[in-house]
Amino acid sequence: KKQQLKGIISFKPVTQDGKEMELSANISSLKELDVALSSGTNGVGLFRTEFLYMDRSRLPREEEQFEVYRSVAEKLGPKPLIIRTLDIGGDKQLDYFELPAEDNPFLGYRAIRICLDKTDLFKTQLRAILRAGHHGNVKIMYPLISSVDEVRAANELLKACKKELDAEGVPYAKDIQVGIMVELPAAVLIADMLAEEVDFFSIGTNDLIQFTLAVDRMNERISHMYEPFHPSVLRMIKLTVEAAKRKGIHVGVCGEMAGDLKALPIWLALDVDELSMSAHSILPVKERLLSLRQQESRELFDRILGCRTSAEIHELLKLRTAEEQ
Ligand code: PEP
Ligand code: MG
Image 1 (cartoon, helix red, strand yellow):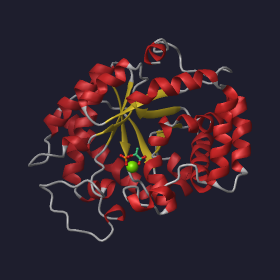
Image 2 (cartoon, protein in one colour):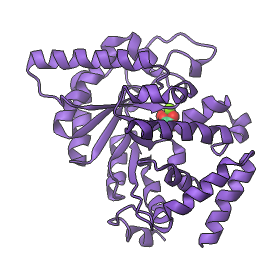
Image 3 (cartoon, helix red, strand yellow):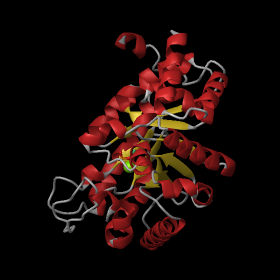
């Protein structure tokens, strides 16, 4: 099977009826980049940068970050590299960072909220990313966005970093693209407005499921309630993709669902541009993509939208697989 999958590495990721899909990798370390490249990845759709900040005694300096981002960008060459700014807090803590214990850390002081508060920390990362952009096809992505204000505040800091770099005569990517993760219901419901502020969306289904269903993604006891194929989750996704399409911006998916073979007809029906997943999922997803038709996926998705329970949706998606084989 593995050998058979190797045979499609160089194939264009396209359905039987011509819908192309960018298949990218999520990486959270340098090691994972090599696996991604050997799977014929389109690029990196999500570079989780937390590892640079964890398991150490102090914040990473601009130069250290720049070296890491640059080496990834150079390895990818012209392929896109979406670097997500620090998404710490919630389950991930930093030893050297005094974060008071919170009753609800997942709803607390984390990710972009920290970055917009500790602006020096944020600007250090933004400067490193901007500079790496001079060496490859780099894009910036903000996590956990809930409002237009946050996007604007982050972009103001980005502008300030550019000004500084200009003054210092340091080369950087002047036209760097900026996107957001759509992973909170609040963002979904104003997706049309957010789309006017950014170049792209990436749907973070892991958090979107958690926050839509109010089900802690780490809590074993209620893990049976963590349901990607819940009608509410699918409506959230549909609203987001449609808003992006109407405004003409690129839209991808980077949660675990992007690599789920069962979900593929949904992305095709919605005409999503990119799926970013762990590297080992790329070839299996491509194999299935090659066998599907977008038109049939649309018909299937229409039926899915009429389903009132996840069980019915699972049944429809499963049926589909059986028919094909
Ligand atoms: C997500 O929330 O779907 C996501 C991709 O980000 P993370 O898993 O790092 O929260
Ligand atoms: Mg997330």
